[in-house]
Image (cartoon, rainbow, N blue to C red; front, side):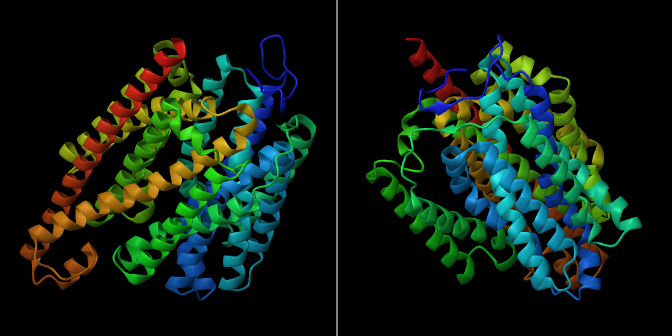
Length: 498
């Protein structure tokens, strides 16, 4: 891997990578898995938290959102700090903060204490999520990096699939605090292993810290993410959501203006002149858009239309994640990327994601069989396209900015997730409202207000039709975006060759 003379690089072997790179990858992926499990495992504990802590609906929402809100707002700042002060140092700091936050969360006696602990865990999560990918880029050479990033991205899917299962098992045997306390031994093990194995790497130029940029980035991202998180609950046109989104967008505009004017910016806006970077950015947003928006709609369909319980519905979405895990752990995804090239891999992967969405829309309306086919096809597309795009983003950024690159990658995923829920949810609601004249804001409320079995059947059919339309809109968006991203990457590669 080519390094900048200003970049303090880890030791390399004759093959171009760190001698203990695969062991290091296993250690940091274990830390990442803990962070990701904590996101999904809490969903299963909501009934217990509501009952044992006498938590209100608003309390539960903040327990869920405090973590993701803080983490999303700090991703760019955390990545920049890792580049400047050392990725190993920030990785250890993230593990320590996450472990302490988990201890406080597990021993919390009130909703307020748990919300504060979750926010602290979000700080640790932001440090971990940015430094982990930056370290992966530092210790693997160009030849092995695609495979390493594929395994890194697989951990995300594994966390998504395993969270509800682990949470259900633990809550059957222990009290709710155990889902947080289990993080502590993993954090301690991670700290010891990182201290012993992970090499330090950082940008040695000594750029002045961009404190104004860090502040503007954090405020802006927090405002936008808060609007995305609370939009489905309060309504996208509510004052609370619109004001938050407006503040976030204005502050992010100020952030861009500031970064263009200063000598040592936190985020070099000239990255966006790189066609390779822009193509990977577009693809990353649209994969997250299609996958998250689809799963948001699928869970509603499985519960409201097909009648599954929440845990059963969650388990029936697991084939998507398990397909990603299977293809990346066997190395098939990375081998195909290396064989056909990044642009072709992204085009093929996004086409599969689009085909999966279309299969769910056209074949999954009245049973699980069509959904299962669509989920497996989507999983194959995600396994192929996501590592290729993450590698394209990181390879388009200088090594000394690897932390910022990881922050950008994480921020794009959050943005795509929120965009998928917002856009596909709006399409569903619009189609549903056009087919049945109901004033209720949700399908359960509409069914409860229905006059008889015939009207309930008509309302359920209208909801299923809305789901089909929204999934097809997602399929078209993902396919067109994937082809555009692949074309930009192809053009950038030709320009580099020339």
